[in-house]
Image 1 (cartoon, one colour):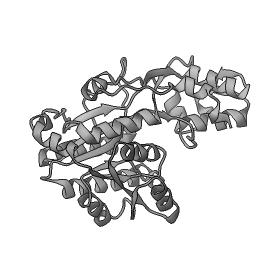
Image 2 (tube, helix red, strand yellow):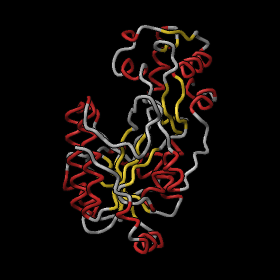
Image 3 (cartoon, helix red, strand yellow):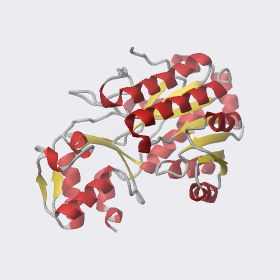
Image 4 (spheres, helix red, strand yellow):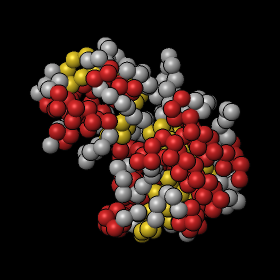
Length: 317
Protein backbone atom coordinates (compact mmCIF):
# COMPACT_ATOMS: atom_id res chain seq x y z
CA UNK A 1 0.00 0.00 0.00
CA UNK A 2 1.21 3.47 -0.88
CA UNK A 3 -0.13 6.63 0.70
CA UNK A 4 0.09 10.02 -0.94
CA UNK A 5 0.28 13.26 0.98
CA UNK A 6 -2.99 14.89 2.01
CA UNK A 7 -1.87 18.43 2.79
CA UNK A 8 -5.00 20.05 1.29
CA UNK A 9 -7.26 18.62 3.97
CA UNK A 10 -6.34 21.14 6.61
CA UNK A 11 -5.56 24.03 4.31
CA UNK A 12 -9.28 24.08 3.53
CA UNK A 13 -9.98 25.15 7.13
CA UNK A 14 -7.93 28.36 7.70
CA UNK A 15 -10.43 29.93 10.13
CA UNK A 16 -10.21 27.01 12.52
CA UNK A 17 -6.42 27.08 12.55
CA UNK A 18 -6.49 30.82 13.38
CA UNK A 19 -8.87 30.31 16.31
CA UNK A 20 -6.70 27.48 17.64
CA UNK A 21 -3.62 29.73 17.68
CA UNK A 22 -5.36 32.64 19.39
CA UNK A 23 -5.83 30.72 22.65
CA UNK A 24 -3.32 29.35 25.13
CA UNK A 25 -3.29 25.67 24.32
CA UNK A 26 -2.35 22.60 26.29
CA UNK A 27 -0.22 20.01 24.53
CA UNK A 28 0.12 16.39 25.63
CA UNK A 29 3.71 15.25 25.03
CA UNK A 30 4.90 11.67 25.23
CA UNK A 31 8.63 11.18 25.73
CA UNK A 32 8.66 14.55 27.47
CA UNK A 33 11.75 13.73 29.54
CA UNK A 34 13.70 12.20 26.66
CA UNK A 35 16.45 13.75 24.58
CA UNK A 36 14.20 15.52 22.08
CA UNK A 37 11.33 15.93 24.52
CA UNK A 38 13.53 17.83 26.96
CA UNK A 39 14.04 20.42 24.20
CA UNK A 40 10.43 20.41 22.95
CA UNK A 41 8.81 21.02 26.33
CA UNK A 42 10.73 24.27 27.10
CA UNK A 43 10.15 25.39 23.49
CA UNK A 44 6.38 24.98 23.91
CA UNK A 45 6.28 26.62 27.33
CA UNK A 46 8.45 29.48 26.12
CA UNK A 47 5.93 30.13 23.34
CA UNK A 48 3.09 30.42 25.88
CA UNK A 49 1.67 26.90 25.71
CA UNK A 50 0.86 24.60 28.59
CA UNK A 51 2.32 21.08 28.55
CA UNK A 52 1.09 17.80 29.97
CA UNK A 53 3.98 15.31 29.92
CA UNK A 54 3.69 11.55 30.09
CA UNK A 55 6.01 9.99 32.69
CA UNK A 56 6.34 6.32 33.61
CA UNK A 57 8.55 6.67 36.70
CA UNK A 58 9.08 8.97 39.63
CA UNK A 59 12.39 10.17 38.20
CA UNK A 60 10.93 11.05 34.81
CA UNK A 61 7.91 12.65 36.47
CA UNK A 62 10.24 14.91 38.46
CA UNK A 63 12.18 15.79 35.30
CA UNK A 64 8.96 16.76 33.51
CA UNK A 65 7.76 18.82 36.47
CA UNK A 66 11.13 20.57 36.73
CA UNK A 67 10.65 21.84 33.18
CA UNK A 68 7.38 23.50 34.21
CA UNK A 69 4.98 20.93 32.76
CA UNK A 70 2.10 19.05 34.35
CA UNK A 71 2.61 15.30 34.74
CA UNK A 72 0.49 12.33 33.70
CA UNK A 73 1.81 9.03 35.05
CA UNK A 74 1.68 6.06 32.68
CA UNK A 75 3.34 4.56 29.63
CA UNK A 76 2.68 3.73 25.99
CA UNK A 77 1.15 0.35 26.80
CA UNK A 78 -1.85 1.91 28.58
CA UNK A 79 -4.31 3.10 25.92
CA UNK A 80 -6.69 4.49 28.53
CA UNK A 81 -3.99 6.78 29.94
CA UNK A 82 -3.00 7.95 26.45
CA UNK A 83 -6.60 8.74 25.56
CA UNK A 84 -7.09 10.58 28.84
CA UNK A 85 -4.03 12.72 28.15
CA UNK A 86 -5.22 13.51 24.64
CA UNK A 87 -8.75 14.34 25.79
CA UNK A 88 -7.36 16.63 28.49
CA UNK A 89 -5.34 18.58 25.93
CA UNK A 90 -5.68 20.61 22.76
CA UNK A 91 -3.24 18.48 20.79
CA UNK A 92 -0.64 15.72 20.99
CA UNK A 93 3.08 15.50 20.23
CA UNK A 94 4.15 11.86 20.27
CA UNK A 95 7.90 11.44 20.83
CA UNK A 96 8.19 8.28 22.92
CA UNK A 97 9.07 4.88 21.48
CA UNK A 98 9.61 1.62 23.35
CA UNK A 99 12.96 0.57 21.86
CA UNK A 100 13.46 -1.93 24.69
CA UNK A 101 10.62 -4.04 23.26
CA UNK A 102 12.53 -4.68 20.03
CA UNK A 103 11.45 -3.94 16.48
CA UNK A 104 8.21 -5.93 16.58
CA UNK A 105 7.14 -5.09 20.13
CA UNK A 106 8.10 -1.45 19.79
CA UNK A 107 6.17 -1.06 16.54
CA UNK A 108 3.11 -2.81 17.95
CA UNK A 109 3.10 -0.57 21.02
CA UNK A 110 3.53 2.49 18.83
CA UNK A 111 0.63 1.39 16.61
CA UNK A 112 -1.61 1.09 19.68
CA UNK A 113 -0.57 4.57 20.83
CA UNK A 114 -1.36 6.15 17.45
CA UNK A 115 -4.73 4.38 17.47
CA UNK A 116 -5.50 5.66 20.98
CA UNK A 117 -4.64 9.25 20.05
CA UNK A 118 -6.66 9.08 16.85
CA UNK A 119 -9.72 7.74 18.67
CA UNK A 120 -9.50 10.52 21.26
CA UNK A 121 -9.02 13.33 18.73
CA UNK A 122 -11.32 12.15 15.92
CA UNK A 123 -13.76 14.83 14.80
CA UNK A 124 -12.03 17.62 16.72
CA UNK A 125 -9.62 19.03 14.13
CA UNK A 126 -6.95 19.06 16.84
CA UNK A 127 -3.28 18.48 15.99
CA UNK A 128 -1.54 15.12 16.36
CA UNK A 129 2.19 15.28 15.65
CA UNK A 130 3.81 11.87 15.25
CA UNK A 131 7.55 11.22 15.12
CA UNK A 132 9.11 9.32 12.24
CA UNK A 133 12.60 8.97 10.78
CA UNK A 134 13.93 10.26 7.48
CA UNK A 135 14.03 7.51 4.90
CA UNK A 136 16.67 6.47 2.38
CA UNK A 137 16.09 7.27 -1.30
CA UNK A 138 18.81 5.73 -3.52
CA UNK A 139 20.61 8.24 -5.72
CA UNK A 140 19.24 11.46 -4.22
CA UNK A 141 18.23 13.17 -0.97
CA UNK A 142 14.93 12.01 0.48
CA UNK A 143 12.18 14.64 0.34
CA UNK A 144 8.88 15.27 2.07
CA UNK A 145 7.02 14.20 -1.07
CA UNK A 146 8.46 10.69 -1.28
CA UNK A 147 5.89 7.93 -0.93
CA UNK A 148 6.11 5.51 1.97
CA UNK A 149 6.51 1.85 1.05
CA UNK A 150 6.43 -0.52 4.06
CA UNK A 151 9.43 -2.76 3.47
CA UNK A 152 12.65 -3.82 5.12
CA UNK A 153 13.31 -3.96 8.87
CA UNK A 154 11.29 -0.80 9.61
CA UNK A 155 8.22 -1.79 7.57
CA UNK A 156 5.98 -1.85 10.63
CA UNK A 157 7.06 1.65 11.66
CA UNK A 158 6.36 2.93 8.14
CA UNK A 159 2.89 1.41 8.37
CA UNK A 160 2.36 3.28 11.64
CA UNK A 161 3.35 6.52 9.94
CA UNK A 162 0.83 5.82 7.17
CA UNK A 163 -1.83 5.21 9.80
CA UNK A 164 -1.03 8.51 11.48
CA UNK A 165 -1.37 10.42 8.23
CA UNK A 166 -4.64 8.67 7.44
CA UNK A 167 -6.10 10.09 10.69
CA UNK A 168 -6.54 13.33 8.72
CA UNK A 169 -9.54 11.63 7.09
CA UNK A 170 -11.14 11.52 10.54
CA UNK A 171 -10.75 15.27 11.09
CA UNK A 172 -7.51 15.01 13.05
CA UNK A 173 -4.82 17.50 12.03
CA UNK A 174 -2.21 14.78 11.90
CA UNK A 175 1.30 15.23 10.56
CA UNK A 176 4.73 13.62 10.77
CA UNK A 177 8.02 15.11 11.91
CA UNK A 178 10.79 13.01 10.42
CA UNK A 179 13.98 13.03 12.51
CA UNK A 180 17.35 12.37 10.82
CA UNK A 181 19.98 9.90 12.04
CA UNK A 182 21.61 12.48 14.30
CA UNK A 183 19.68 14.90 16.51
CA UNK A 184 22.70 16.44 18.16
CA UNK A 185 23.44 19.03 20.83
CA UNK A 186 25.00 19.58 24.22
CA UNK A 187 23.90 16.89 26.65
CA UNK A 188 23.33 14.11 24.11
CA UNK A 189 24.44 10.83 25.65
CA UNK A 190 22.71 7.96 23.85
CA UNK A 191 22.53 8.78 20.13
CA UNK A 192 24.77 7.64 17.31
CA UNK A 193 27.47 10.29 17.85
CA UNK A 194 28.04 9.27 21.50
CA UNK A 195 28.10 5.63 20.36
CA UNK A 196 30.79 6.39 17.79
CA UNK A 197 32.79 8.33 20.38
CA UNK A 198 32.63 5.49 22.92
CA UNK A 199 33.72 3.02 20.28
CA UNK A 200 36.62 5.24 19.15
CA UNK A 201 37.82 5.60 22.75
CA UNK A 202 37.67 1.86 23.30
CA UNK A 203 39.40 0.91 20.03
CA UNK A 204 41.89 3.77 19.76
CA UNK A 205 40.71 4.72 16.27
CA UNK A 206 37.78 6.71 14.88
CA UNK A 207 36.42 4.50 12.14
CA UNK A 208 34.24 4.73 9.07
CA UNK A 209 33.29 2.23 6.35
CA UNK A 210 34.62 2.23 2.80
CA UNK A 211 35.73 5.64 1.56
CA UNK A 212 33.37 7.38 4.02
CA UNK A 213 31.68 9.53 1.38
CA UNK A 214 28.20 8.29 2.25
CA UNK A 215 26.17 10.92 4.09
CA UNK A 216 24.03 11.27 7.20
CA UNK A 217 21.38 13.99 7.60
CA UNK A 218 21.45 15.77 10.95
CA UNK A 219 19.68 18.44 12.99
CA UNK A 220 20.45 20.34 16.17
CA UNK A 221 17.99 19.23 18.84
CA UNK A 222 16.84 22.80 19.52
CA UNK A 223 16.09 23.37 15.84
CA UNK A 224 14.07 20.17 15.90
CA UNK A 225 12.17 21.42 18.95
CA UNK A 226 11.23 24.60 17.10
CA UNK A 227 9.86 22.54 14.23
CA UNK A 228 7.72 20.45 16.58
CA UNK A 229 6.21 23.65 17.97
CA UNK A 230 5.48 24.99 14.51
CA UNK A 231 3.99 21.65 13.52
CA UNK A 232 1.55 21.55 16.41
CA UNK A 233 0.65 25.20 15.90
CA UNK A 234 0.03 25.28 12.18
CA UNK A 235 1.14 22.35 10.06
CA UNK A 236 -1.59 21.23 7.64
CA UNK A 237 -3.20 17.83 8.03
CA UNK A 238 -1.32 15.12 6.23
CA UNK A 239 1.94 17.07 6.14
CA UNK A 240 5.27 15.28 6.25
CA UNK A 241 7.97 17.50 7.74
CA UNK A 242 11.72 16.90 7.63
CA UNK A 243 13.59 18.11 10.71
CA UNK A 244 16.85 18.33 8.74
CA UNK A 245 19.51 20.98 9.28
CA UNK A 246 22.46 19.31 7.52
CA UNK A 247 21.23 17.62 4.34
CA UNK A 248 24.13 15.20 4.36
CA UNK A 249 27.38 15.06 6.32
CA UNK A 250 29.98 12.59 5.04
CA UNK A 251 30.61 9.81 7.56
CA UNK A 252 34.33 10.27 7.05
CA UNK A 253 34.01 13.93 8.13
CA UNK A 254 32.17 12.78 11.26
CA UNK A 255 34.91 10.24 12.04
CA UNK A 256 37.63 12.85 11.47
CA UNK A 257 35.90 15.37 13.75
CA UNK A 258 35.63 12.71 16.47
CA UNK A 259 39.28 11.79 15.90
CA UNK A 260 40.35 15.41 16.39
CA UNK A 261 38.31 15.63 19.58
CA UNK A 262 39.91 12.49 20.98
CA UNK A 263 43.38 12.98 19.43
CA UNK A 264 42.97 9.68 17.57
CA UNK A 265 43.45 8.73 13.92
CA UNK A 266 40.46 8.32 11.62
CA UNK A 267 40.57 5.40 9.20
CA UNK A 268 38.44 3.05 7.14
CA UNK A 269 37.55 -0.21 8.91
CA UNK A 270 35.68 -3.38 7.86
CA UNK A 271 31.94 -3.09 8.39
CA UNK A 272 31.78 -6.18 10.62
CA UNK A 273 33.97 -4.46 13.21
CA UNK A 274 31.17 -2.05 14.10
CA UNK A 275 28.36 -4.47 14.91
CA UNK A 276 24.67 -3.73 14.53
CA UNK A 277 23.06 -1.25 14.08
CA UNK A 278 26.13 0.91 13.36
CA UNK A 279 27.43 -1.31 10.55
CA UNK A 280 24.06 -1.06 8.80
CA UNK A 281 24.00 2.73 9.06
CA UNK A 282 27.59 3.79 8.52
CA UNK A 283 27.81 2.34 5.03
CA UNK A 284 24.55 3.74 3.60
CA UNK A 285 24.15 7.06 1.78
CA UNK A 286 21.00 8.62 3.26
CA UNK A 287 20.87 12.40 2.70
CA UNK A 288 17.54 14.16 3.22
CA UNK A 289 16.24 17.58 2.25
CA UNK A 290 14.07 19.94 4.32
CA UNK A 291 13.46 22.53 1.59
CA UNK A 292 9.69 22.00 1.47
CA UNK A 293 9.40 22.00 5.26
CA UNK A 294 11.26 25.28 5.51
CA UNK A 295 9.01 26.84 2.88
CA UNK A 296 5.78 25.50 4.38
CA UNK A 297 6.34 26.62 7.99
CA UNK A 298 9.04 29.27 7.58
CA UNK A 299 11.31 27.10 9.69
CA UNK A 300 14.99 28.00 9.48
CA UNK A 301 17.63 25.90 11.28
CA UNK A 302 19.94 28.37 13.03
CA UNK A 303 21.97 26.29 15.49
CA UNK A 304 25.39 24.75 14.82
CA UNK A 305 25.62 21.99 12.24
CA UNK A 306 26.83 18.52 13.22
CA UNK A 307 30.57 19.00 12.58
CA UNK A 308 30.62 22.40 14.26
CA UNK A 309 28.74 20.95 17.22
CA UNK A 310 31.22 18.08 17.60
CA UNK A 311 34.12 20.53 17.39
CA UNK A 312 32.73 22.60 20.28
CA UNK A 313 34.04 19.84 22.55
CA UNK A 314 31.07 19.11 24.80
CA UNK A 315 30.77 15.53 23.52
CA UNK A 316 34.21 14.71 24.90
CA UNK A 317 33.75 16.00 28.46
